[in-house]
Every structure is written in C-alpha cells, then in structure tokens.
Length: 103
Length: 336
Ligand SMILES: [Cu+2]
Image 1 (cartoon, chains in turn orange, yellow):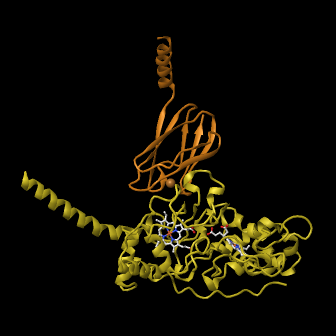
Image 2 (cartoon, protein in one colour):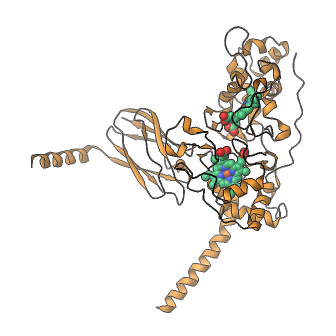
Image 3 (cartoon, chains in turn brown, orange):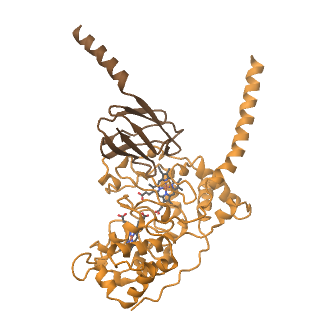
C-alpha cells in the first residue's frame, strides 16, 4: 500500500517534469541536426524507414549509450541524465548525426 | 460488392504502373553528379596547393626507404588502387587488406575499410608513419617534415601554396588532401544516360540499373552518384577480420567494412577488403547466394537473390557503364 502510494507520487512527479521528445530516422537521416532538452528528459528514437535498419549510439562525451539494431517501425527510448552535450550517431550510416544538448 | 472489388483491383494496378514509371525518373535524379568538390574551411583549394600535393603523393622520398609513394599502392593506372588482393608495403611485406581506390573521397568523412580515420587531410599521415606501409619517421630528428624541408624545391613550393606557414607534418597532410580531393572519376556512359542520352548505355544496362535498385537491392548501400551511403556493413565476406568491430562493440559493426563507391569498378579487381572476389561475375554470384557466412552481424539486406543468368548479365552490364574515359594522369617532375 505504502509502495503503491510512492509509485503514484513518483509517476506524477516525473510526468510533471520529464518530457519525451521524438527523433525520427528517415532516408538515412535524423529529422533534426541538433536538439536541446532538459536533464531527465527522454528521447524516443523511432525508425521511420520502409526497409532500412539503424543502430543508434553515442560515445558521449556525456550520456554515452548504445541501442540495439532497430528494424523499421521500431522505437527505443533513452533517458538523458547528465547535463552536457552528446554526439548521437548511427553506427551503420556514418552520415547520420545528432547533437543533443542537455541543460 | 464484387464490382467494387474489381474496380479497386483495377485501380491498384493502374496506380502501380503509374508509380513504376514515375519511379525511374525520380530514381535517376538520385544519381546526379555533384557540381563542385568540397574542401575543408581551413584548407581551401588553390592551384599551388594541388600541384604541391600531387608531387608529395607521387614522391617516394615521403617514405623511410625512399622507394614507396602513395601512388605505389594508389596507382592511377589501376583506378587508384594496386590491382592486388592485398597491398604490399615496406620491405615488400603483404598488408592485411586490399588497397582501396582513392577516387571520389572528398565526399567521404570516415575513411579506411574500418572507418578509423576522418578526412583525407588527417588520413594522409597514417600510411606515411605506419611501419608496415611507408615506415617514415614522424618525430624527432630526421622526421618527415625535416626531410621535406631539406629539399630546396619543396621550400619554394610550400611558400607558394601556404605562404608564411611552417612546413610541418600536418601541413604536408593538408597539401596531399587538397590533391586527393581533386581525384574524381570522369563522366561515364552512365552519367550521360542520367543526363538524358538514351543511347549512352545499352538496354541490358538499363535493365541492370533497375535490378540494382529493386530485386538485387544493391542500392540499399550503394546509393547516390558515387554509389555509397558511407555505411559500414557486414556483407558476409568469410574471414576473421572484425573490421569496424575492432572499434565499435555493437553487433552490427562486427565484420563491418566500408561500403565502397562503385565508380570505375570494372578497373578495380580483385574485389572486397581482402581481394577475395576476382571478377565482377564473382561479386554478383557472391551477392546472389547471400554472402558466404551467416552470422549475427550480417546485414539484413544480404540474402539469396534468385537472380537468373540474364539478370546477372544485366547487372554486370550496368556496372560496366560506371567507368568513364578519364584522361591518363601525367606524372610530376619532382623537386630536388
Ligand atoms: Cu543508420
């Protein structure tokens, strides 16, 4: 009961502050070159291709992460916990680049 | 109900035919040649820089043994490769991979079969300093920049190309980069066809172009005027080389190699990073059987294609139209 209460409070709090932004992958490009978000926000990486697989990752400098290969139609969510900039790339398509600035 | 279905069916057919027709026209647009060559902001083009870069590219004194130049392995007579399955470096030792062409690299950021270098200007010092390749001393007394500075003619050429700048290894790399950016494949029959000359290529080659873009799905990786999307993929070449997987741990990058452009491809045999496919027919057979090894990293697009013998011929005819009648390269008289 107590835990349920906490869970509800947590859900409310995080809903109020953290946002979710969608970044689309289409024609071997991200739909933006740069994006600014707030600490704790999430980016949903959505593969909107007809038949191209992507493999989004970041070596940082902040918020390094690595997604599994993404088939068309699928999405993966990444939470950005640290302030700073992050260069997001696709391991397969080296011309795909997205600069994420976390404030 | 029945009638509605028939109408719908008829509509979908006509729509399909219409779309197909439109496709070829818009498809061809994707292969238009670029109008100008990109240079780096801090290393703009000038004739003097290009002349200097060309001399350095062809000068064996850039190597430790004074006997190997960039052109030893990137030889214009072999479409800027060396015609070997694997390069041969310092002391005539075989390297682990094939020497790739340097055609059309001004448009490519990540270089080498495994993407370990960025930009031509930065890459050029790699082979010079590599013990296996040109084995030149890069630091301390008697290093590359000292050696070049010691040649009076180069001092004059550098002053013209980069006035008042000190001759450093980096500057040598920049000059070579300017030269390499100008190494662009000439107008090929395919380009003339793209521009509207229907007679420039055969009907078989045109069918091959459609196959390349549809059933054979080559375009999934070999896209655009230079026929590469600069991607790194495992296409199932059977060896133990991890390629880009040495630097990136993701599954997709294990055994992943640079997707090479396909310009002048008829002149660039043997093929693949290890030279394992001898002819274009071999390459087409390789793709037709879906590569040589099934592993987790294998690209999804690589699967058996069930091409007929005549489809294979069409595909090859098309690949043959990507070679232009480029003028032979003249060799520079080197400064002393
Ligand atoms: Cu991608």
